[in-house]
Length: 290
Ligand code: PAF
Image 1 (cartoon, rainbow, N blue to C red):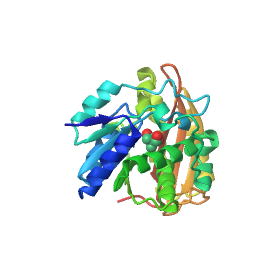
Image 2: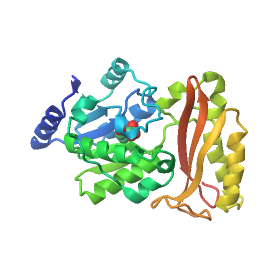
Image 3: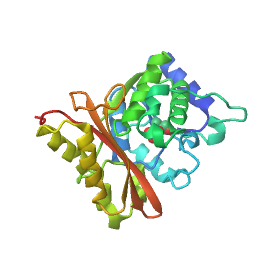
């Protein structure tokens, strides 16, 4: 039977008991509103451990003052039902008060990696992520934790903090799960306007366009950026936040596409109630794949 645990201390005691008995524990950290992407992460994680913990916590500290914390989709009952169908031993669902009790004042900063890409338009986001992920890893004490590659920068930051803080956990990246038409699965897709869904596809088609162009020899990231911004803006109701070609490890911008180039995109799309910020990314190779 799957358990739901709300209290960090109880969660930690549960995990320590498993570990003491020789079992391995896995963690999939989430903010809920599960879709196939989350379920796929859970299946991968379950195959890597004896007991899987899924954390479900919409972390307020990773949202800026004008961001979508209030609009972030939530459905706790549905999430529990979906988790029950997977091999999940525990859903850890703390409240903000339990995670950030009165007097809380510690923050984890991964400085350079957090300064690029999403960090430019979301200045408090990654300190919030790094802090809550550190807390979740200390509370659940997993042997392995699985994160989606859609949040490419987040995954790089988590890998860095785990190495820098000597946390005894293996971090596994999981490939982005996509809808049939290529749209990267995201809880935020629930806030898209179905009438304007085409606009959300501007990201995936931009990734394809970049690969096609690079495959034909266009390796200048300045020229590619102009082309991609034009492509994205050709979809009604889109505003580019960034189109960035970066080194996959340092996340530093690069001028000429090479074997380690990742194209990262963030685009605002008109949604049901206000703009929805979507992200996507992919490797771009200087020659065609396959
Ligand atoms: O990727 C997410 O859903 C969140 O950023 C995470 C890792 C659960 C931290 O709140």
